[in-house]
Structures are given as C-alpha cells and as structure tokens.
Image (cartoon, rainbow, N blue to C red; front, side, top):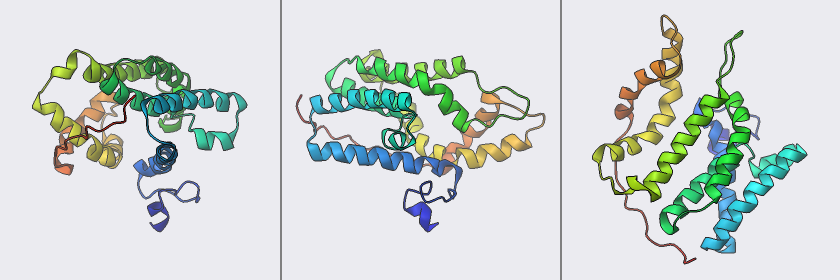
Amino acid sequence: MLGNLTVAPGPLGLDPVDGVSWALWVEARFYLLMAALLVLGLTYRRVVACCGAWLLAGVIARELHSPLLDEFVLTRYTGLFVAGIVLHLMHRFGQSLLLGFAWCYQLTVLGLRVTDHAAVPPGEGGPSWAVCAVVLTVCLGLLALAGTGPLTGLRWRWPVTAGALTYPFYLVHQSLGVPRADRATPPKKGLPCSSKHVPDGPAYSSPSRRRPSSSWPSP
C-alpha cells in the first residue's frame, strides 16, 4: 500500500493495489515532463515545440530500442499525450497539423498498446488492429469536432454527466467488468459484455461542474 502511494509501484517492483493503478507511473512521468516545461516558461510556441520534439524523440527511441530512453519518452503513450495537448491548443487557438502527426505516431504503436493490455485466451487471436485504429480515429475526431468544429455549440446536459462519470467509472471498470465477464454464461465478448456495466457508473460518481480557467499565455 505504501509503495503504491509513491505513484511509482512499477519501478519499485511492487504489484498495484488495483488493476487500473498501472497508469500511476505513466502519469507521474508525464507530470514531470510538464513540470519541466513550466519551469522553462509556458507559451504557445514552446508548447508546440515541446510536442513536436516529443514526437520526434518517440520515433528516435523506438528506432534505437533503448529501454532507458523509453522510460523517459513514454513511446507507447507519446501520441496520446501530444494529441491531448494539441486538442486543447486547437480549442484555444485554432487548427494545428500536430494532431495529425500525433495520430499517425499513435497508429504505429497501437499494436503494442493493445498487446500490453488485452487478455487473449489461449488459441484465440488478439484484437484487430484495424478495429482499434478506427476506435482511436473516431475518438480523436469527436474530440476535435467538440473543440473546434460544429459540436462546439452543443449545450446538452447529458454529455456533462457522462464526462463527470468517466474517471470514476474508469477507476472501477476492471473491478466490475472482469468478475462479470468471468461469470457470463455463455461467455460474452466486446461491447455486449462491457455495456452491462455502464448503468453501474452513476453509483460511483457524483457529477460536478468546474469552470475552466481562461488564463493562457499569449502565442
């Protein structure tokens, strides 16, 4: 328990107290990288340059096959982190080609990401790369449309509730989903099985709103 509280159970050789805690060390390294950027000074150009350099470092790290460099660059997650940053920049300042580069980069490591987390029964094939690529593309597309496209004007209440449920549901999805999937008779896969757990989400979340800060350094 104490080792997990350090947010670095993996480097300490400890098992996470919960399955979703695998992300702690990944997130901690991202925060350290962002802290370094904040120390240098946060401007639009510096953030864009950091994102571009990060993608380039990810390509180099994968080419060198260096575990040490991979620990710092987070090659499996570089495209996702950069895409998130760029989506926010697009919402504030307009379109950016960096989102396309981040998407292309993440497609190249998508197979590794799926292999890392997919539990494949013996004798069965893993998840389809094409299906995973479509899901990734649709998600990034919807986020882009919500930030700079025609979906920016939507003011429906249910997306606010759904967004508030996202993180709490993520924290319990494995604890809820794995036991139910194991008990499913006949065994169910994919969305039919996962959809059973969605109604449980409200029990673990209290939706709240928070007004985002409007301050951001000028380009």
